[in-house]
Length: 222
Image (cartoon, rainbow, N blue to C red; front, top):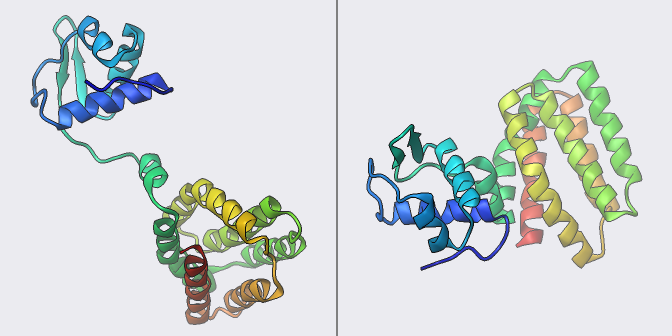
């Protein structure tokens, strides 16, 4: 029987228990064995089992009933967003960015305020200055793209963009370290053109330039 081998133990124990539930070892509504039975099966302590059960209860998989035990309340649940992103390949993340940012660029062109435009231009200037340090360049580039999403004035799009940032940053830093080339004038000119389209309230151009840029990024990562 599979046992936990790596930390964090509670997370691993929760996943192993969930796998066993999904495999049908315990049916919907069935009571789980006690901590003293589960702990040696998974190779962890009883406190770790208790934390794993708390995690699964939080996801709606288990429910503790006072004086009765722990019961299965769901045999499958959607993965949380962070887990989905951790498992997603970087190309999948870029494809999602294409969907989000091309629409955000069009909305930004239609809705941007003078304050939004100042933020976009300031972020563009900061990006122009960050051409010698990889991590600084990636952060400045992300900040520029975020100002455009902010200017779309859609909180859902902004929340989605922010959720991608850690996964994207990791991949971009790694890619640029391998390429050893970044911050080229041609690349920056693409961003200048996108900012100009938003300033001109040209939604079609802003969307098209965003899509072209991100598709080129996807091809570079492929």
